[in-house]
Each structure stands twice: as structure tokens, then as C-alpha cells.
Image (tube, rainbow, N blue to C red; front, side, top):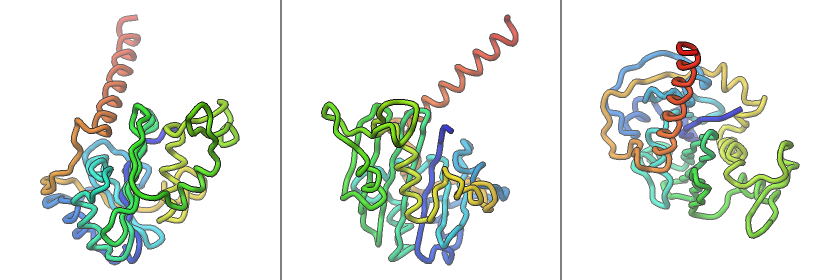
Length: 244
């Protein structure tokens, strides 16, 4: 399965934080509440909405790739700082995975300090800060060095000989998410969360933080690539339907 996902997770006593306070911390100052839907629909809706749900004492925010990219630096993004103030001693984890372009990244903040961020861009470039956390160590322990590169043997998957880091985006991204929600979204244990847990959709009317997705950023370019690919496919289908 190809994954397109963008989420912000808040742990601790997250269920006590109100949606209105979360939206304000994210910079959404005007919005209207839309529908109740599932994570399956809101994990990458492509409609610039913000959706909020809760499981295992953790808040899950789907931001439609509008804020997460701004967290991929050693410094706190404005929304990370404000959400950390709401969570106090808890962790705030931002993550994104676009398997169609081999992009993934995540940023982990605890008590207002950036512990770790890692970003593997569409060209395979790795940017990172901070020490490896437990969930990453488990994956890196399965790697080997080959021709000066860190690779993973086919025992992790079955269709090619070795995997490079950008090809293991689901393992890293959803392994990190399990740190807070206690289960893997891309495995059977995450089915109820993915399909049955209710999320509330909000339609932002005005933002007040200068960190919505910059289209010149690596993640912004990834979205542009996805749109371009989609247009090419639609044009090809139209050609065969109407002109052949």
C-alpha cells in the first residue's frame, strides 16, 4: 500500500485539551466545523482541512501537510512551541510520509525542547538532529553497511535484495507514531483507529501563524509532484477514452 500521511500527535493528558485550544495553537483563528469522519478519510484529505481525534490518551491531528514541514529543523516551529505549552510535560510528535515520492520525516518535542528530528527528502538526502530514540534504534539495529551505505537486508521485506533508508518510510514513520498511540497504523492492530475512531473535521477560514506549507520546501515540492502525476494520469485516461 502506498501511504500519504501527515499527523501531529500529542501525548500525556491530551484528552483534557479542547479542540478550540488546539486550533488556536496551530494558528487557526477562524474556522467552521464540518463533519465527523474517520482517519482513513482525513489522514491526507487534500482539502486544507484540520481534523482532530483521540485514542489511548493521545490526540491525533491531521493537518493535510500544512504545518508539519515547518517542524523539520533543530528549532521549534511556532505551532510546536504552542502545542507544547498545552501539553506541558508531554510529547508532541509531528510526522509525514509520502511513499509515492519516497519522502518521510518526523519531529519529536518534549517539555518544549526539540529532542529529535529526521527528514529524508525525495532525492534521498538525510537531514537530522538529536540522538536516536528507541523506535529508530530498533530499525537501525537491523541494518548493515554495504558499499559505504546503510542498507537493510531483504528479510525486512521480500521483493528486492536490500532496502535503502528512503524505502523504509513506513517502518520509520509508523514506528515513531506507535511511540505515542501504542499501535502501528499500517498493521492489523491499527484497523479500528483507522476506520472506526471518530475525527472531527474543521475547515480553516483564516490562519495566524507564518508556518503553513511553503510550496518551495521539500514537502511542498513533493505535493507539487503528486499533483503533476495525478494530472498526467487523468490526461492519459481522457485521451484513451475520448480519442482512441
